[in-house]
Amino acid sequence: MRNKQPSIKEPRKVKARQHKARKNGKIKSNAWNIIKEFYDYCCLCCGKQEPEIKLTKDHVIPLCKGGPNDIYNIQPLCESCNNVKSNKITDYRKQYLDPLAILQIEGLVKQNQ
Image 1 (cartoon, rainbow, N blue to C red):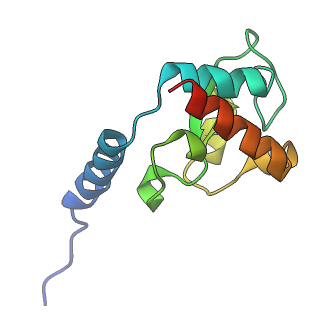
Image 2: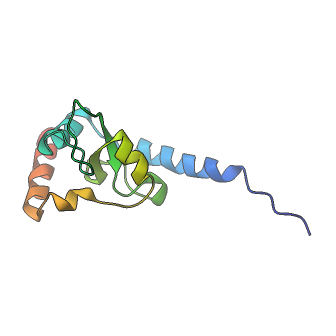
């Protein structure tokens, strides 16, 4: 019996899926700016605001878990919180939004596309 070596190709498959997801969906900068403004330039996890921190686009459902690369799967997190969240599925937007607010964001984004 051969010892099964870890496959070097595994990370490549994940990266290929992530690249494909990024290619198929595009988040326009004006839509990202609307999201940041809506949340008052705050990290939804720790509550710190820009310019104290730099907000990053966090995928609620990570690309490596099949999440889409579109504005409806994005939440603003600082780099530190985004790194801690890693590839977990955590939606911090729920603490801040009711269903009507989500519809309001969707309307703003659609108007500015």
